[in-house]
Image (tube, rainbow, N blue to C red; front, side, top):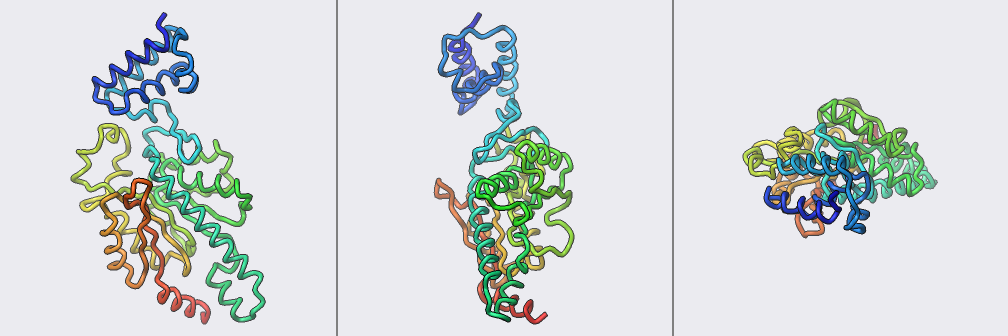
Length: 328
């Protein structure tokens, strides 16, 4: 009977021969999965014997990994924002860099809640009425996660707000996706993290139909150029192309969303859009073209690369909108 150490060594060699750049990590995760334990246990007990069943399962997993299948799909799970999400071919595997989008979303939601609280406490008569109108009349903060996929962003946000003791009725979160299969996966993950009561799932393209003024729009839409799809790592060929292919310039889908923001974003609302590392300047130019007078600030990730575009009405545009809303 082979030991953990022996199987790990053989697995690492197999993966390296197959071109894996993370052979050691992948082998450990797959052996742990085959054994029904975590990777720490595998590493802590190198001389432990491995049964023939788990060893055979491990060999099968290695073969699938060599073919390019993502480790997340092989394990059926992916860690994101401190949570474990079920993943499969119905949706894109959540990326670590997208966690920044969730962190920024929490900040924006808390900011909106503070604004509502301040407006509710105000006793300045007409000024209070205008402030209340500009912040949604004191109702729940309206959040939409566009192209939710596995639901990672919306669910991680809901969990983070629950941890901050934000009542569910204070923040209404909608998760929308064009793929019914992805929505099913997102629902499963929401139930698994006990936030099904904090989310509403909607099928559709980009923003849901209706007249809701969204306080916060979150989107990790496809942003890979069509001509760059073939050069992506082989693991991405197992993921839905619909979730990756951003059209000729990589910004086709994001461009369509920008066109809808003018009539769908609340006066003081914000849109947080994940972009490619080479799209910082282009997204700023695109917002200037599609939404004149609006602001677009690009947040960089831990590697210093452009990652999240924060889009909002410029001060003058927002002021005009508030005046029109107040006189309506």
